[in-house]
Amino acid sequence: MVDLKEELKLLREPILETLTEVIDSGQYILGGKGEKLERLVAQYTGAAYGIGVANGTDALQLSLQALNIGTGDEVITTPFTFFATGEAIAQVGAKPVFVDIEEETYNIDPSKIVDAITKNTKAILVVHLYGQVAKMKEIMKIAKTYNLSVVEDACQAIGTEYDGKRVGAIGDIGCFSFFPSKNLGAFGDAGFVVTNQKTLYEKVNRLRNHGSDEKYHHLFIGSNSRLDELQAAILLVKLKYLDTFLEKRRIIAKKYTESFNPFLKTPPIIENRKHTFHQYCVELDNRDDLALELTKSGIGSAVYYPIPLHLQKAFQYLQYKNGDFPVAEKTAKRILALPMFPMLTVQKQDYVISTVKKFLENKG
Image (cartoon, rainbow, N blue to C red; front, side, top):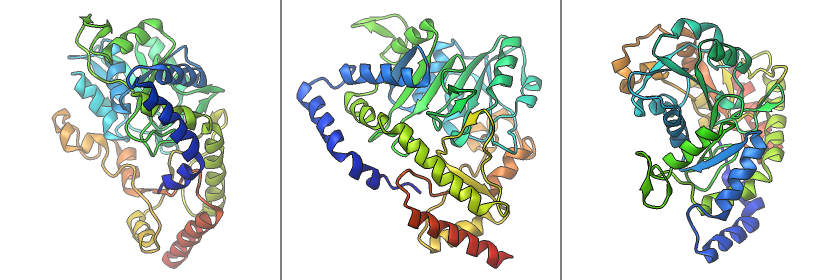
């Protein structure tokens, strides 16, 4: 699915050089590399402030805490996402309230949000799934009407654009994951929060550091979720290549789409949005058969995600059931991600395409 070794061949020397700088400095937590990364990623997204944190899950949880969301509150989100989206809501004591997705983009369907709003609703947690931006204009309008905060789960979508604005800085607060396989990936866990609101910036900054901004003085209960200098240094190197790598992803996606249309449902390219293709997913009825055929041919594939959140055992207490969110449930049975990474060669992509086409021909 993702070959990070090819990327490392290109970046090995500058990464080793910057890691040596950190090691020689003796400063490994909250140092100059982290501060520089915070400034540059904020600038890249168009946000006023950036905060490095330990991972993408913490980014979500700390953002909700900064918005004072907790016990008795409700947060509207999508059931078709990685578990961390719903988990972060539950971890702060709030209730995840799920809303079905659009068939076209797999993102939360704004037309269904209003019906889910109650007196306890405090926020909408939007996921830009696979690098495709959600309908932020409609979502922001709903949030303004009902006085709700908007948290962007952009963990898969750094660099994604909507009306010329990069995701993360469109809502009240935005969250990123720099897990190794992400479009901007560290050499371990790493995460990031951006916002244009100084009060939220200050709150997250303290929350990630035990509720403190002065040593041994703690204003409230926080946690230990700091992005270390080694990961920050690696990310600074890789940030320079981000836009180049995103363009390579778009070129690969374009070739996939041209090859598979109209035989498979492929990711849409929508006017006024810029997709970054963290995943390239197709949809078909016999998804599992295709996945097996790809495995036999030495090709990776994966299902993101086989079980929607409302049907996960961990969320049984919410009392959702099969049939509550039909689009998400249908998609979970049909979707398949194909190899997608910037260093995917033309030859390897052609092999993937020919294998998929052969499978489709045989299934007739």
